[in-house]
Length: 88
Image 1: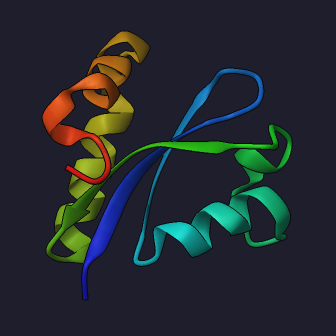
Image 2: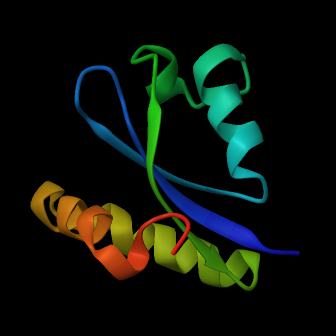
């Protein structure tokens, strides 16, 4: 099973990082479900800015942790790297 690390932009401009096995479903949960994260519930709507795949939950969790430790500027640089954009 593949896992994905993703970064969302909230309506207040803040960034949220998480992991999931289904990015589309999780994005919908963040925007319209009680299953969305507490942080994003108060900052709806959110939009997907970045995703990357991981081979397993452990590596996805480690990557999520590493991204969460980055500064906002470094996260935005990661999002804007052409080789890392969704669909490439």
